[in-house]
Amino acid sequence: MQLSIIIPAYNEAAILPDTIANIREALASSKWSDKPCEIILCDNSSTDDTQQVAEQLGIQVVPEAERQISKARNTGAQQAQGQWLLFIDADTYPTAALMNDLWNTIQKGYYVGIGTTIKVQGGSKWNQLRMERLNPLMRWLNWCGGAFILCEKEAFEKIGGFSTDLYALEEIEFVIRLRRYARSVDSKFTVLYKHPAITSGRKGENTFSSFFTVTFSTTLSIIWLFLHLLLPKAIRFKGNPKFLGFWYNRRNTTK
Image (cartoon, rainbow, N blue to C red; front, side):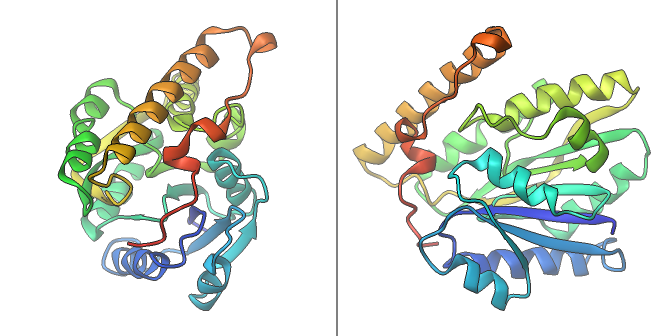
């Protein structure tokens, strides 16, 4: 198996068919068309028909009872057979051009991880700007969001996957460790930008409540991330998802 695509999902029954169709189209129309690939969905304790929809779409489904993005990604990775692990959020998909870029970068032979910038579709204008404003920073700092991130399976296992001490921004901490590992084996991590991954802006409605939730959740998650990075391992503490409503409140299942 060449590539394992891992999708963490919580209450994503409504959007899942479009996401899977777009992923399959990108694979079929790119250099991955004749490569062995699998799609694994980790159902993160959904209360809707996410599991049933995924099974109807012919996707392998694995359960993860604890509501945590890190655990969902790690659980999906444990079932993966591919040499490469591609983590894609349930509301995100690549274009064929991005998948070609991914293939061409892998073939250079010295990358253990690859991220990408994003293009936001739908949602409020302020949320689109909020999300896309990070693209230049991603390129400059050489890190990426968790919506679309590729990692060599051996490297993933060597660094221990995503940290389960973090309930948000875990992808930043993951990339920090992945880049450190890459340097230790004379490899690299890079962020692609010519053909961004397409992701949804649906979680940023034009309401004060939505704006407050985004701001509060993001600020708190940044504080927890810095504490995680700065404190000795012996005295680190886990974040609490009940304060991170932007990611962990009951999901709006509309597209």
